[in-house]
Image (cartoon, rainbow, N blue to C red; front, side, top):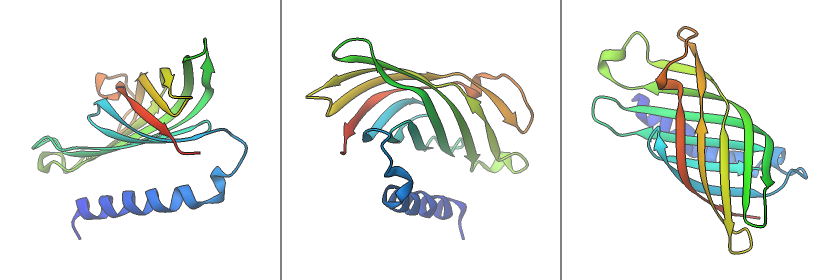
Length: 160
């Protein structure tokens, strides 16, 4: 079976099963769904309380890859005033490459520190954010590289 089909099925099943599980039923706060643009390209965002999950795919010809980032926000949407808030966390990320020239090393993964600023509107229903997540690449070898720096701007909608 084609790798792209397997990854697409995994993402689809995860997006159906994870929100239905009891792991997110705790008193951790609001659940949000959104979209972000940045590096790596476009990501789908799922936030439930302090957990932040981003899933994306780069469609650039010859550089295709699947991206997954999971973070635990130690400081989760701490308010600065009535509409501005900020978050800080620890996360793990991974990229699976589908390029033909990357047969040997088709996976890259590591840790990052997501830092975000949020602006809330419409009684906290709509939230715009800007996030940067500097990181360290741990696999295939530990190194600091610009490939492990991620950033996004986008929005989320309150689901609760």
